[in-house]
Amino acid sequence: MTTARTTRWAQLHAVRRRACTPVGVPAPRLPTDCELTLIDLRPGPTREQLADQVAALQAQNAWLQRQLEMRFEVLTLTVAHASFADASAVLDGEVARWPTDPYGRPVDEHAPQVAEGGGR
Image (tube, rainbow, N blue to C red; front, side, top):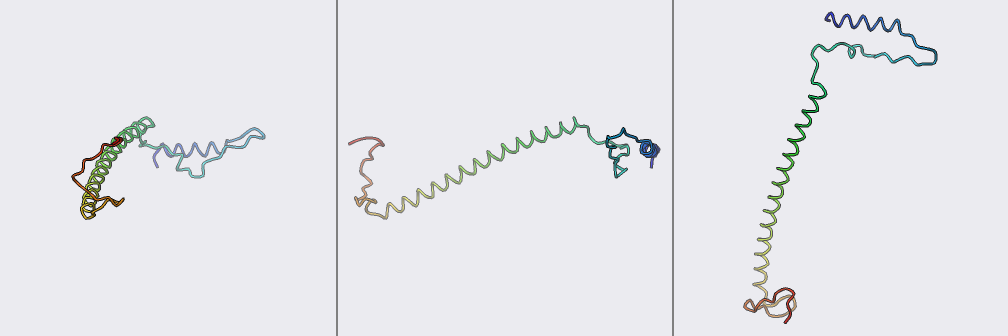
């Protein structure tokens, strides 16, 4: 134990012996583990330093989250495009095999397409 720790230990026991409270006031709880009351000769980061570290990590996390979202969107669009292309090819193959549309009319690929919402 260092001198500072020995001094702190002696002060702790002196306070225990002298502790007195007015009638009706509960006595303060003394620590059960005296090691927690020792002076730390190598303190860790301050609250401000920890807050700065947390803010930096949150900013980095936000940047990584945006990167992940963009990559997921690109992947989704790629898969959707590939799926649409595959589905379109399958549909074209199916249409080529059918001589009629689902309503029983003959399929004529050379017939003019009617614009959406247009009349006769």
